[in-house]
Length: 185
Image (cartoon, rainbow, N blue to C red):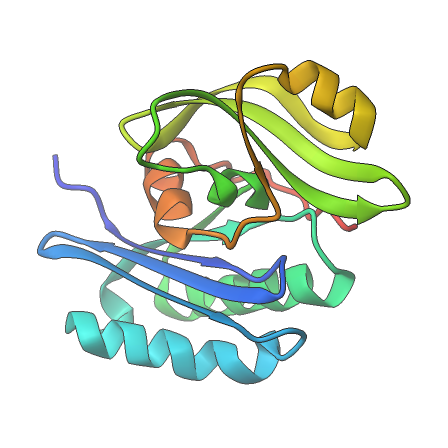
């Protein structure tokens, strides 16, 4: 069974990250936009779809990074995905933005975190197989940095990396949630 053409987007960090899975390849786009997600998102989606030769009406699924992130940032991404999904009749699923921070080329358990200020991090530990998160080993939550570091132990720990929306697209296609909620920093 062929998976639907999937567009993933993440606006939870200072980056705007897009990933597109099609039967003829994978396409991605990422740029640091600081707080200009709303201004950059429509044109970036249009450019990515154009590069892939995909009409927006061909999209079968949208995957949105649900945060944690800035209040405005995550709402921009979610609003855009919900609006586009409704307009074209595509399903919209969500996954934690922390999943977009994994190193898709590294198998096994790995930790990811975003700085939450004041000695805190938003972090999680995931088990990754084939470039896809298959298990949440340590739940995504806000932790004191020292507590999270102790939990990470000797695992690979990616701190504040740029997101990879292709990871969200792949994981969303495999196990995206329709009952998602946004998380704010």
